[in-house]
Image 1: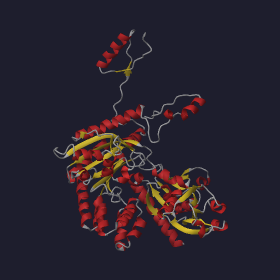
Image 2 (image 1 turned 90 degrees about the vertical axis):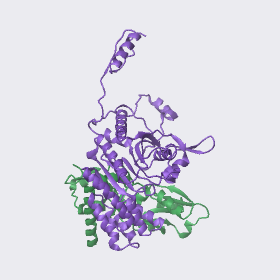
Image 3 (image 1 turned 60 degrees about the vertical axis):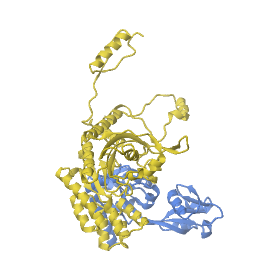
Image 4 (image 1 turned 120 degrees about the horizontal axis):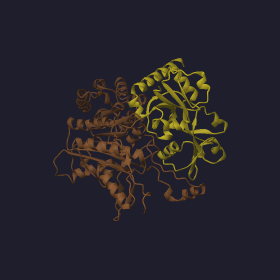
Length: 395
Length: 214
């Protein structure tokens, strides 16, 4: 699988290279790339596999516009995220963006185009998204392909579990189940605590950041003026570790406010299902995952795979989003990063099982053009793979 | 097989960091330590240390090439990397300060010229105070900039204050305190949870022991 991928080397004389460097066509903008050869085949196979999993759970594919109004993404993702988009103006002066996100577009379609359709809506997509600035230092790409699904108009544990079951199946189909981990949290565990401590907005943000970076010592110090020393210590320890059911039991002893308790109940219901399906090896509860508090409204999860330095996917419940487009309804969904998955699977020493071995090509023969193509068409009709030697025939 | 790769900041923190790792139970042969190799393994073979420039520690860890790293908070503030910071290590304590020849130097009639190795920290500090600055990014001997008049003041790391003193500069403002921190890659924290938390615990114990000896 380690075929030199993606780049074409053309031998040039030094002075040619020097001059071509100054030509804009030989240079590519940062964060953009080609895929070819084994890597392109793998990427296509991953996409096909994931889309077939969605199809198996009756998710309908949706293709969204590549360009839409910037204000749509601003409303859907929040200003700080939408900010990353490539922007330009329409003929009437309104600000446009190349989509930095697909979920906003799907949510808008649900509230408008599919307003009359029966609920729940099950939609999926595989589409590139574009960001003018990468999301982090470790992410150099400015174009990346998201494969995702959204379950709109359904609430409760059944809907949450449906999405988790799909995530689980996609990971299994890619032969990554032994090398991956899905971490679960519910944003209301944190929100309940912040509410109980009556934290002003700024302090809430600071606490979120300390929890997010697992900075237990500073978190404990931060909490001192707001709660008892014992509670502070217990809570700081709690967000440090992820784990199985024990984490929930430990959490209940420390966290007593009703909002957080309800969230812990929700997590526990999901965990019981995960236990009964014997999937506990693939999941963990991570109460310290508080990265996207303003976007998600309940369950959140992240997908990690060995060989990738960053998460490979994420998702959660976002009941507040469709209201921004005029129709409030519950929704849950997730995205996987196709480029990240391709990188991980490319690094494997063996070809993954879901890749169909490509057929050996045969070479049709013919003295004349007409004979050559007649032979080629016959082989193609029989389902064979052909490669023509275009130099062989008399022109 | 190596279970954990740890990026160590070369230079100022290196010796203290290695001492801490030793007292946390990692064993390194004298031969490995005295060699010029940039990656060495501990005797158990479970831990691999890589030695990189301080500013590169967040890069290696954020991209998951190293699972953990030990680096000063000053470097983290400057890099803005998305990392977990589960432990403060109580070593290499120092301050990031604004230093100048005198108080008056930081109140020029025009733009304040600031020389520094820490452009982000400097920009944030003066930005929060509404001071317009002309940032001059240097890579070493920053004190010289204030002495020779390249800049009105400098933003730099101060341990003992000796270098400032010898160059007739004084601390005008302390921006923040800095000490070494353990940083962990987000994916490693989940995927190697057991090894990472065991490592954190042994470091915690080592720090407490050091504290009681001092």
